[in-house]
Image: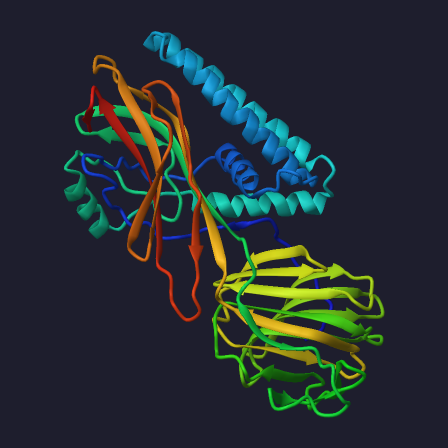
Length: 457
C-alpha cells in the first residue's frame, strides 16, 4: 500500500465525544442546563491547556506539557485568590471584579498559547490549532426532545433550555427554579489511553528459514522466513503481498507493531496492518517505505480496494526502528520509535484482523505483535465558568460537579461550593477498565447545584 502523497497530521490527546444521559445526581440536587451553542475560541484553547496539563508528566520538558502545567497552576491559584475577595464585595463591585478577572484569564491563555507555539513550524502550529478546533466542535450542547421532556420531569424546575451532549455546556442563561442565574459555563471532556491494549498474537519470526507457519493466512502473494525475519517472496498479481494472523478474532479495537530487520530496497516497502479484511480490500497500516525521493513512514487506509495516505513523514531508514498503530473506535494513533506521530479519526473500517503487507525487495520485519481490548482509559471531564444570581435572594452557593455513567453506574466528582459571584471549577478523573469482548457504555455530563441557606433549587 505504498504511494507518495500529501497528508494532514493531527496529534495530542483524544477528545471524547460521548453521549450524555441527563440524570439526577443526588436527592434534592437539580441539573441546570444551557442553551444550545458552541464554545468560543478562547474557551477551547483554555480547555486544551487544562486537559493537556491533566495528562502531562510533571517532569516533562516538551513545550505543550510545560506551558499547560504552568497555565493550570496559575489558573487554579488565581481562582482561589479571586474567590476569597468576591464574597465580601457588593454586587456592583463583584461584577466589575469578575470582568477584570476574566480579562486576566484570557490574557494568560493567550500568553501560554503563544509560548507553546513560539518554536513550532508553521505546519505544526496549523495542525495544533486544527486539533483544538476539532475539540471545540464537541464543546456544544443539544438534546433530543424526548430527553428534554424526561429532564424537565426529573428536575421539577422551569427548565428553559437543553442539556449538554458529548461534552458541551456553553454560554447561556440557566434557570434555577424561580431564581434566575446568569451563567457562562464551559464543559468539555478528554480521554487518554493510559496503558497498552491487552496482549494478543505475536511472532518474532525467529525460526528456521521457510514458510511463515500455520498462524498466518496469505491473501495474495507470498511470504517466507529469512534470517529470523519475514520477507515478501512474491508480490502477487497486484504487486503487494498480504497476510493476516488467524489466531485473533475479528475485533474492533486493536494495535499492531513491528521492527525493521532489513531496510527496504529503493521504491519498495513493508507494512504492519490492523483491521485487515480477509479479502484484503480493507485495512489500516503503518508502512516503512524507501522511495527514490521519499524515505517515508506512512499511515495508510485501504477501503474497498481504494488506497488513501492518511499521513506521510520523513524517515531515516534504520534497522531496529519500531512502528506501531493503535486503533480504538474511530481514533487512529501512529507511533515511530515510541513517539506519537499522528492521531486522527476515520470511520470507514470498523473491524478486522492484524497482519502484514509488503512488496518485493521491501526489506524485512520481525518482533511483530498485536493486541486487542483489555486496556484502561482515563477520562477528564471539566466544567468551569462564572455566574451571578439576581440580588435579594440571600447568599447563593453554587457547587459544580462532573458526572459519568459507566455501564449504568453513576459517579460524580464535586468541585468546591462558591459564592454567587465567584468563579466555579470542577475537574474530574474517571478511569474505565475495558474487558475483552465486553462493550462499555459511557455517558457524561455536568451539574451546577444552587442553594440558598440550605435550600436547593
